[in-house]
Length: 375
Ligand SMILES: Cc1ncc(COP(=O)(O)O)c(C=O)c1O
Image (cartoon, rainbow, N blue to C red; front, side):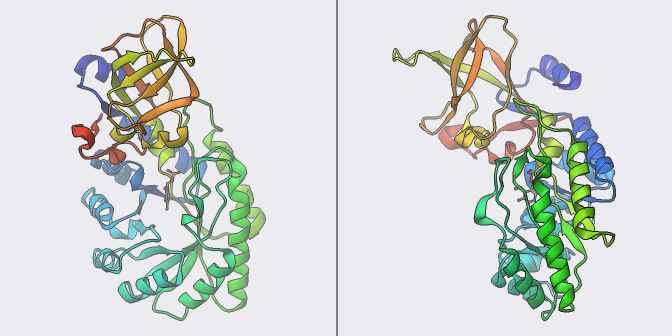
């Protein structure tokens, strides 16, 4: 945790649960990524954390933006980004929303199916389009599965079809899975993208852009490779597969820009034992899966959790406060907390700047959405 976050929590003592984000960490992450991926245009994936303070800071730094919906487009326009810096990156859009984005000036759209391509051609004439290809998500803690993308063979047919419609076939995108811990994970998708460039060129369709997606990790309980290692592997792979005809490159980092910038402070509501053979204590917090920690689903994302107490570490099961049995954070993952932990203690859940505030429910069990501060 940065000294700025520590000072804020100690001096303000905000009521819990709450997220506090250090905007200077967001800025440092942006600068590190932009420097490492020199020449790659950064489109911040707004969905990771759409707070106006984050968007405004990134606009000032020269970032572009990946939006998943019209409200996200409106939020980033309100933060001062011009529409030329926005990509409508969802592959699942209502035609009316495509039309609205077009009206707002957006000219870059994703698709991965024939029907979506047709919608874009009707509602956003003349726009640039890129086709998302499937990846297997291997190596990622939060893989994005088969829901998005199509096979490279289908991408070829769709991009060729795009050339016959009133849109510009502009490139290929993919996402190697969120919290991707293998810097080499981009290699096979880049090989497929390069093949698509060549095959389409052979039939007279010239593509220009490769969208590297997101996937850049944030350190949680275990270390992750440095951003420089990702940049090195990606740029090597781009050169290997594209030779000296390098495409225009963009990336859509979300978690990697904001994850480690935030800390959630939570209060221990109850410590209980079950009298069963397991013997571990249950520690119930005032935040759970429905308060913003949805990425603990299947215990996929394992946040570091700290107490100020010094007692010997004892194994615990961590759960949220709602009357829903799915609201357990960690039961399989080995977590420990000090033996002298007490009801009413405050704990810090680190690296929670991404995918938390917007995941919290509007009032499940009567609990308020996650409060947040940007400092
Ligand atoms: C299209 C798209 N781009 C970028 C991202 C951001 O990914 P990450 O947070 O792993 O960087 C996502 C995440 O779901 C996405 O769907």
